Each structure stands twice: as structure tokens, then as C-alpha cells.
Length: 168
Image (cartoon, rainbow, N blue to C red; front, side):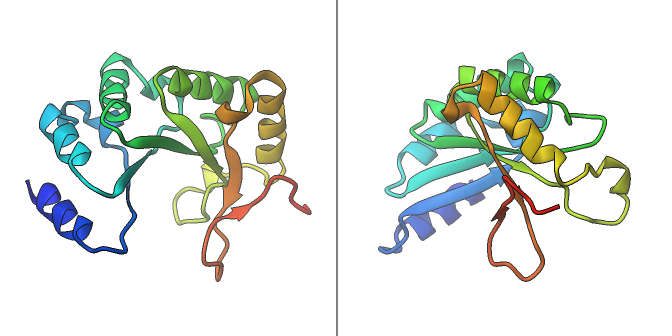
């Protein structure tokens, strides 16, 4: 209810064209993607963009697929961003399976992120050149719309930096 109130208030601002949400809710708690939520999002004037954060194909199970389908059928644009994680999803095969699963339910793979350097996560870090290699591998086996952009958040930059061919 609170989300609906906030979205309705923001939607009344004339220059707002899009509302963008980043969430793992459809993955970790898919039952929260209700028909009421879909109806509320469909009623908005602004375009609704939902960016889910699925990192591995094993996260996209039947209940998650159903919740993502509901989102894509609600007139929202649904994108995915994944984080490249050593030992979890750092292969072309795993990324290809994730991308295929997502595209099959109407979710476009948008970003593949280099892991941010944060305390406690160093064991998940991959070499910077590995991401572009994976993306090149994906380009060889998937249609262009199913291939995410490899990006990194760099300190001091106002947005994500495309890292397709890093100078490393």
C-alpha cells in the first residue's frame, strides 16, 4: 500500500517519465508479486522499469519464473543485472543459461557487473578481463538482445562504466 501511495504521488509530477525499481523480491520472495501490485503498476502514467538482480540460473525457479512473468505482463519493462562472482557464475556456460532462462520469460539481460570492492567479498572477485571474455562468448551463442553489457562502478563516476574491452 505504501509503495502504491509513493508511486502515485511521484507519478503526478509532470516531468517524471519513468519509475525505476531495483529489486530481488521476485527471486527471494516471489509471492509478494501480487495481482494487486501488477494492477497498481499498470495504472501509472509513467513507464515502469523493473531491474531484478538474478545472478545464477538456479535462482530462476518455477515460482520466480511465475512472478517475473506477472511483471512482464503488467506493462512493465523488466531487465536483469547480475554480478560476476568467482566460483558462482563466472563462466560463459552459466551466464548463457541465466540469459536464456530470463529471455524465455520476457526479462532482458541488461548488465553484468564487475563485483564492487567491498569488505568481506574479495573471495568472489574475478579478474577484470574475465567479464569481457564471457560477454564475447555470449555474443557467439546468443542473439544480441540476450547479451548483457559488462560494466563496473568506478569511484567518482556518475554512472556505470562500460568495460567491454578494459585496458588491463
